[in-house]
Image 1 (cartoon, helix red, strand yellow):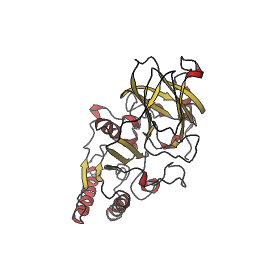
Image 2 (tube, rainbow, N blue to C red):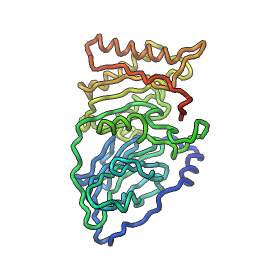
Image 3 (spheres, one colour):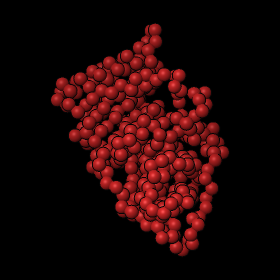
Image 4 (cartoon, rainbow, N blue to C red):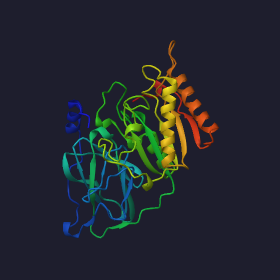
Length: 334
């Protein structure tokens, strides 16, 4: 795993976190929901090799529980660098600043009696290390409920834009810290919530399509910092795939067109071996612009449009072009 700058570690250590506390009920009467119990729903890529509890590292991985009760805690184990976004009944609540080791974290209390849904979503990206989920604790008399069936699935493949890098910074001059990143509030996660879709985010800041530091080279991993951790593609099939890779490729100089487009088409072919029926959207992100001498945005749009046209001509009508447009700094930037 890449080393984490000391500034980031310091930011984590100094970040406010929710204090640990027990539920109000008698501990002997509390309801324990083990990490592999059927009512728990996992989204994103989770490594289930450890029977103590699954691990995840990709951004926006989620764990969801529907239950009756008024309070819930979660037990998580972490290197001490990650933040997790809490959602209660579909609305964003606190962010958890995880400490090193295994700890119990209060999620919410004082809920009205009845059914509720709590989701924990990994706000930070992969280079902060994996988090292991070790179970929920409910108050006395509470009951976990069967999750709602999943009818739609979206997968986003991208870079910092998809990770929500710097999303919660006060302004563009604020230096990055893990507390300002929130993949659970990036465009892919927002779209998934709008469409009531299950979501997987395979993104890493700075990654490219080609030739080096690529996202495709780690795409098949369950835990992206562990090369031996291989994802079972038969376990989850997306209906729609968004490829949002080009910003870092065109940032300093245009990549060789023939080689870049060939690499892009090879990646599409790889996706097709796993997901023959998915709708695939090849995107250009909002951060590229054009200058007087270089036209990186125009070139990226042309490269990707030509890739889509070639795939369509070859008989794949489920490949589409999507341009996010160009960001306006008047609206604020990460």
